Length: 88
Image (tube, rainbow, N blue to C red; front, side):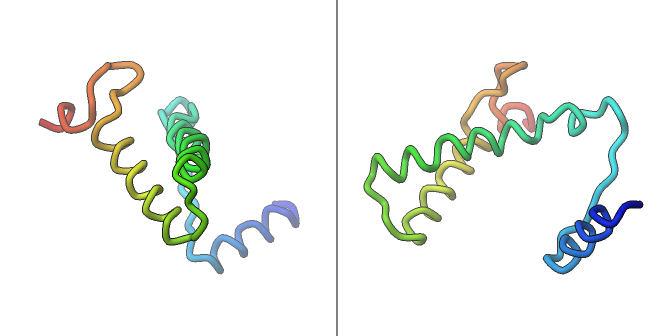
């Protein structure tokens, strides 16, 4: 283990973030989770600017709305279903 890896693990532990090791070929290894973050990183600044949000409280409201929309309304790119349909 190199020094950078040790420091990264210490920093994550300090923040209360744990590491999860995954199998090669799993959805997580294919960056499917990163797509959600990419979506949010592209949409939140746009919506904040569009609605002239200037405070962190306003931005958090936008974040909450976008996460809800992403998790409950946005169709899955591969199946075309939205999450509530999938769980039903």
